[in-house]
Length: 183
Figure 1 (cartoon, rainbow, N blue to C red):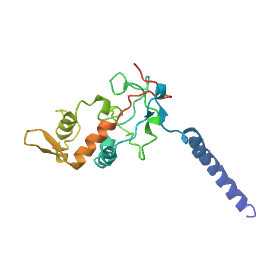
Figure 2: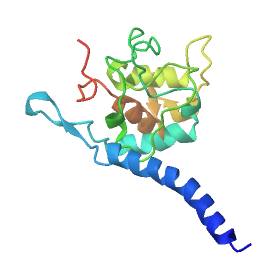
Figure 3: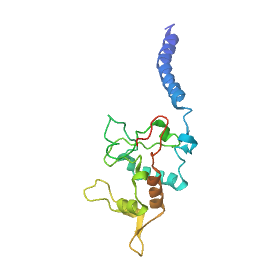
């Protein structure tokens, strides 16, 4: 019993040292990661999210979209994301540095949304898909986010407009120091 404190200290150090190494190692690699300038002195990327898109992120999480959609374009050899047109380059850590809560997702029931803003054609197209997804789609209808206008088009309510702004802000169509844009 004389050495109980020494044994407990040894067990604690054996567990704490590797855990601390993981934390400090991750911070050393990614802690100083920030926005990078575009080639030839262009704007810093990734771009800041507009205010409405920040609200839309919350709607996206509240509706559970993250359960069926990912936001990470896998590199060649790990999937066919680039071949399917979901992105022009693989996702890297720098793409997510400005996000307070990264919504990568863990399953792909629906398509990857990492570069959806570059693929989406218009607000009306996004609204039509959200309110009444294509037949055979596993996606539920979110008609409660919209109301019909007098001209027959769909008008998003506050949450619907925020979700559309968030989906349009999802863009990875720029070169990163870690992953150059495929032309």
